[in-house]
Image (cartoon, rainbow, N blue to C red):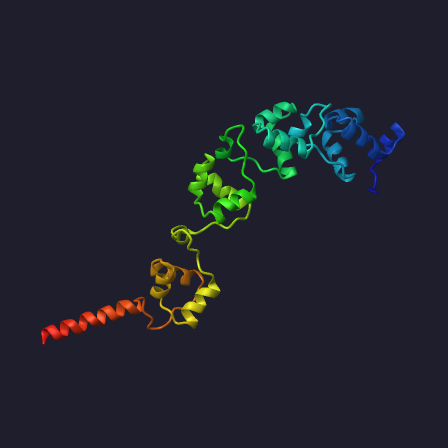
Length: 254
């Protein structure tokens, strides 16, 4: 309980009630303004705000202060239905509840409702956003590119990338996206086994997977796998061909 000033005690004596009860009823329940209360108690509005803080009563900001007295704060479910299910714009939602867009934004932040970006806002009203399972199937199982998925769903590739990030579906990097269909990036453990344990060259590993050896070199760098000294990117078959060519040229010269 805070130490009460003479002015606080005077108001309590005049109205015959505890000050926190008076403030709660007038400011919170009846939604009277701090200016109105300052006129009622014959003090300045700043003192009213200080008293509200002392008693732990939430002070309305500018947009909240302009709300109609009959206003009932909409629930998260109602806002999600209007904004997500019915795909109303932020302005249309605000108009539904006869409040400002800035206050709607405050409620969205409070309820942790994600707002649409400009690209998503341009989607058709009847558009149904694909769930995580469908998106994972398209991108991971079917190995479609983000551009391919965007074409199927008639959306922008950037929107597909945003959805993948939101659902924590790992996106392929540039080297992975250029892999042939059916070929997946080797895990660090498997690459170490082939390169360090089995002593295969990057060319041999690339040949085994049907990809260029430079891609294998990129994976080694990404995994921070140390390169072998005096290792060659030339495959065994290529070495044999070079030796045959060299021997043939030597015979011809002699």
